[in-house]
Amino acid sequence: MTEVCHMLSGNVNIQIDFLEWVDIGGLQIVEIPKEKLSKIIALSKKYRDRPMDLADASFVIIAEEYNVSDIISIDGDYDVYRMFKKKPFNNILRKHT
Image (tube, rainbow, N blue to C red; front, side, top):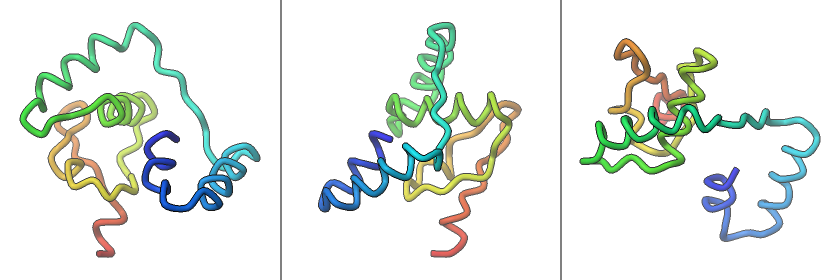
């Protein structure tokens, strides 16, 4: 949510629309347990040349946990990032640009 609001920072009304959409169930919010911190650190080290930030590492952790490879992102780093067993992400947005 933080990343989306950052990307929408030019228009507070759109931010509010997004937050209201989340509030009515448009998005599932998932907590990342402390036990996953070592995986986040490992991913950050692996992709330090990109560099992978906390939001990116968290996204990879969640994708692995829920076995979701289809994503929508304007971040080209997801062309490089991999899930477990080197499974690539399928960035739906990049296919249409």
